[in-house]
Length: 344
Image (cartoon, rainbow, N blue to C red):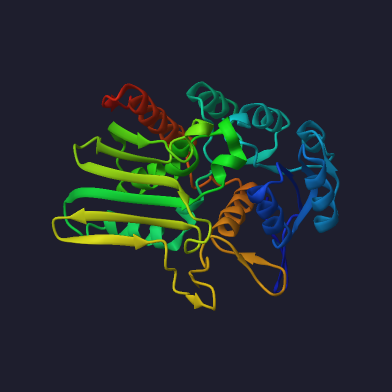
C-alpha cells in the first residue's frame, strides 16, 4: 500500500490487527501494535477467562475465548499468532485462508510436516516467523562483520543461551528446551555465518525438570555444511533473580579475529539492598509515554512495513523450516545418543 503525502505530513494506511494468545509474548505484541502509528488493535483471543478480563481492561478491545472468532473480525488485515509452539498450524492455516498477513511466533512449528504445510499455505502471502533476535543490532552487526570477512576464514562458533526457570512449567509439553530456547541460537548460528548446520551430537541432563519430562540443559557439538565445528549450550533452570533472567552469547572465531556478542550485561547495572541486577535494555522497552521499543517492537514495525508495501519479509520461511530440521535432529540425538545428520 502506498503512503499518502500531503505537504510534509505522511498518512499511513490504517491497519486492523488481532493477537491470538495473550500470554507474555501476546501481551507484548498487543502493546507494540498499540504504539505503532496507523495501527488499530481490534481483537485478542485467549482461552483463560482471567486473562481475557485483564486484556479487555488493559487494551479496551474484545477478548474472545476462541481464536476463530478473532480471526473472523470484519476488516482485519493482520494477525499475530502467539499460541503454544505445538499449536501453530490450525490458527495460521485459518488466517492465511482469509488472506491475512501473519506474524507467527517462533518456532514456525514443532513438527516438520506442520512447518512445511504452513510454508505451502503462505506462498504469495505475508508470513513472518518471529525469530526476533535477527532484529537485535548486536547480532545484525556481528553478521555484517562476518560477511565482510573481518575475522578472516571461519574457524568455529559457540553459542550460549541459559534462561530463568519458569518456562517449562508454563508451557508443559507444548514445547521443549530445544524448541523454545535452543531454536534462537540455531537460527542465529545459521544466519550470522550464512551456513547450514549438517550434523549434531547432543547430550542432555534432566534433574530439576525430570518430573515434567524436560531436559534441564543440553550441550550440542555439531558441524556446518563446510565442516566448520560449533557448540551450543542451552538451559532454562537459572534462578529467577539471575541477572535479567537470561545469560546468552555468541562467539565467532576466524583466522584473523573474533566476534563476540554478550547478552547478560546490556550496559545497565542496578545495585540495591537486595541484589545486583542487569535490566533488559534490548529485547523489550516500555517508555514513559506508553510506547514500546526494543527488538520485538522493531520486528513488529518491519512486519507492518511489509504488510503495507508488499516487500518480502526479512526472514525467509525456508530459514524457519531449517531451524525446525536442526531442532528435530538435536532431539533425535538426545534420544539415540548418536550423532544425527540434518538433511539439506
